[in-house]
Image (cartoon, rainbow over the protein chains, first blue to last red):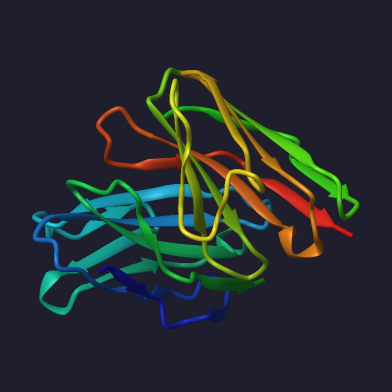
Length: 115
Length: 114
């Protein structure tokens, strides 16, 4: 069975602050994918990143960075110098790289960035 | 990634009626997925739709309530039948990329049932 835990239900920050969204997962699969999606108030689910389980290199994309640590089963997401447009619900997801193609989603973290 | 559109984007419906949601993809895809997101909740998979075969429903979802069509490789519909207020949700269509690694989502349909 797979499980994704996003313990932070809601985070509130002031613009320009850095913020980290936590994601902890459980799986018995040896190879798997991890994802982050962003859901702004409009409702669309926007794909942000996919990480393969054998690639533990951290990734940076502009103000976004991801820290994948297999030893702690975590895949955390940091937004540097947050902006109001970053306000959204962020979902972490997990799926095995073979077999079932259905991702397991966490419950989401609502990020509110105040001006 | 594929470009996915959904119609309608939102609707307000009366209980007991049915609504059909359309999902159009700009490229041919083997599998299409329908998800439900109830208010303040995460995503729940309703069913997987393959072209040319009946949809596969997840536990808790049945064809009579959520009939799905998949007439070709770029289009699918989900009908929410005999609606009740509990069906108020965002309904999302999704497809996999060609490598079968990542699911991409449509803009969603916001449904409110009164």
